[in-house]
Length: 84
Image (cartoon, rainbow, N blue to C red; front, top):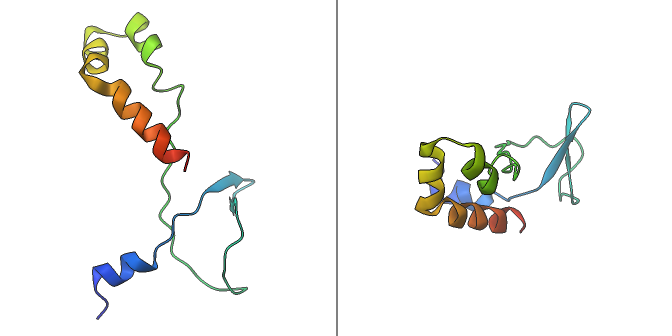
């Protein structure tokens, strides 16, 4: 039986673009033709969705409270992680 740690060691993070119904990796993959793989798809954050200035101007008091509680630091760290 395979341990979780062994499975995680086999994982590799690969950026891809979704076009015409297909996921297209942004870099070549070391796979054989016809080889089957498992995918975990995680959307990248949309910076327009987390525009803190816009939220502060047009958002509710709750939105402003979230922005003041360090959401900008969280967003910056998320952007930094996604740019790798």
